[in-house]
Amino acid sequence: MTGPLHGIKIIEFAGIGPGPFCAMMLADHGAEVIRIDRPDGFLDPRDPLSRNRTSIALDMKKPDAVQIARDLCRGADAIIEGYRPGVMERLGLGPDVLLADNPRLVYGRMTGWGQYGPYSQAAGHDINYIALSGVLHGIGRAGEKPVPPVNYVGDFGGGGMMLAFGMTSALLHAARTGEGQVIDCAMTDGSALLAGMTWGFKAMGRLKDEAGVNMLDGGAHFYDTYRCADGKFISIGSIEPQFYALLRQKTGLDADPDFDAQHDPSKWGPLKDKLTALFATKTRDEWCAIMEMTDICFAPVLSLEEAPQHPHNVARETFIDIGGAIQPAPAPRYSVTSNDTPRAAPTVGADGDAVLAALGYDAGRIAALREGGAVH
Image (cartoon, rainbow, N blue to C red; front, side, top):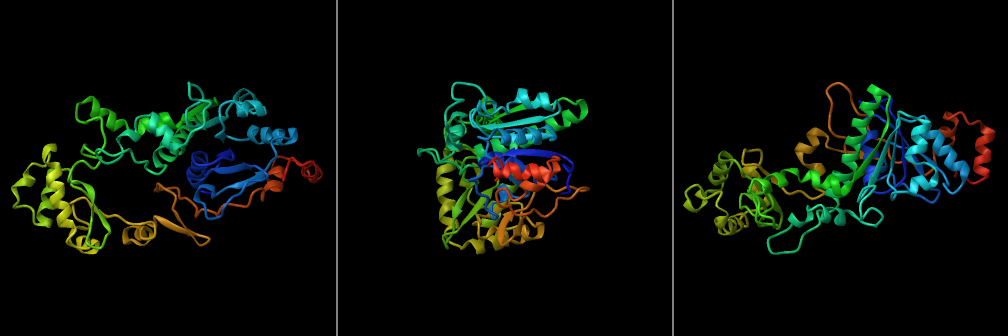
């Protein structure tokens, strides 16, 4: 792999969601990621979160498998694990052990609630983590129940992406000082941080502590989605006065004095009703012809089928085809280094012999480990 993280070796203990997303980010940008899979695990070549990996399948109930994992971590720059607090310690692979073996090691821990706190041993999912951080409360329409934003905010934004940032920061520290450390990445913490601007608006008195009534949550008529005549949707984000003026001009509403009250929340409901009726008179393509690529702050709301075909995404190669599966391309882009085209996920354990040979295990020892069931 090329990329700015070329030369970095990371051991990933197989998990779901945010841990694999973090590993994907690091691998996309050049790190070598060796994934320790369970013998009964499964990797789908169509899954972006599992791409760019090398896989070894270990039965961690076997002492020899734990020793292999320890040997891998001894020669690595970082590890990623997403178990409940205490599991790695019970395996004999906790931070005290692995950092004693390798003082430069960056030990990345991904959980929903964090390594400590009253909830730390409870099960949970994205919806629960962003509920506790206050984020979910603000997502939805006025007067209706909160709407989960898929699992983008907790698992991936506040989880996997936050851990990738933390690990990269810790790797820079280790490169300068030789000192490794543990990263306690909790999705509650990360999702709270993603809402930093919301907390700022609240402190400044610019935000009501409820959903669907504020400028950026669908409360404002100039920042929302609208259904068109063909049942498809468009998005409008005309916040700044010059963009709002252009919206009025392009829609023929510049002569309607009601729209002068852009920032009066008491008028947002009636103004939204007017825009709803107006946008329903043309198809999405007709509105695109009028407003696309202008300073209105406009874009069509594209489906997953449509997005890879849009000319802007095609021009930037935002999506790529890997083995017949459409996936998002690595991001961001660099001016000097470049990211390789990602490799599809391997089959579980496909690289076991090569991984062990790179550790210095000879053919007889590898065969014995397979015979004993430590390696699959």
